[in-house]
Structure formats: structure tokens, C-alpha cells
Length: 127
View 1 (cartoon, one colour):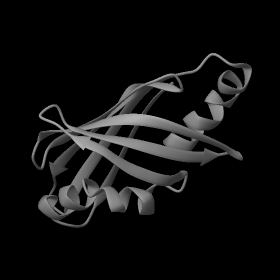
View 2 (view 1 turned 180 degrees about the vertical axis):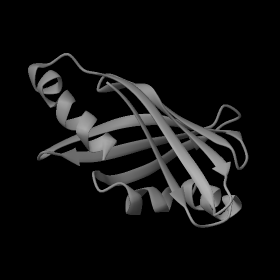
View 3 (view 1 turned 90 degrees about the vertical axis):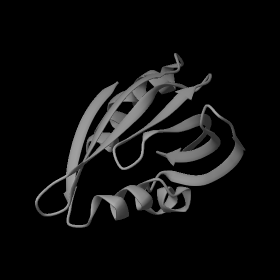
View 4 (view 1 turned 135 degrees about the horizontal axis):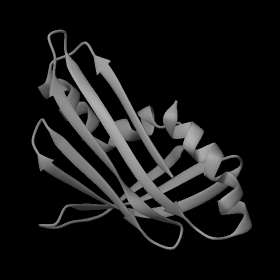
């Protein structure tokens, strides 16, 4: 699964970046995300456990969240049995605020349900 999205927000890049990198806000911004647990912070990045509910099914995945460059780029890497891939966010200052670009590439599990749900998940991320 692949997706690319962008949105312009009428707010300064420092504010938008700070809001987007605050885990409590992830629960507010992602309706399918129902729980987020901090596992540990390391030199590599911050490890989280995410619980999502989509189409009545709940899945839990581990994520490594990395701030590559302050006020510019973050990456969330998923690598477990349910989901493999990454979401890359880039933040660019514009005349009226901040442009956020999101690029995601995922490989879901191989069960019949996981293969069947891939188009739904792709549509979810593209909206």
C-alpha cells in the first residue's frame, strides 16, 4: 500500500511541527488510533505501541518514531507481524503557514482479512 497526501495549515511551522510531534495529539488527529503506549526512548528514536480499530477489528503495532530534522521531517517506522513500512512527514514553510506532506508505504499481513482490508486502509489514509 502506498499513499501521498499534503495539507496546508495556516499556522507557523514551529507550532505545526510541535503539535504534530506531540503523541497526545496523535489520538486526536487519527480517529482509528484508540491507544498509544510509550515503550522507551533511545538514541535511535522513541518506541511506541499503537492500538488501532478499523472496521471493527483491533490491531496493535509497534512503531519507532524518529525526528530526522527539527521543523522539517519525521518518520514513523512499523516493523512487526501485523504491519511493515513507514510514514514520512515533511514540513515546509509557506507564505500563509505550513505545508505537511505525508508519504506512506506499508506491507500488511498475509491473512485473507488483511489482504481484503488493504483497499479500505488505503482509502482511509488517502482521505
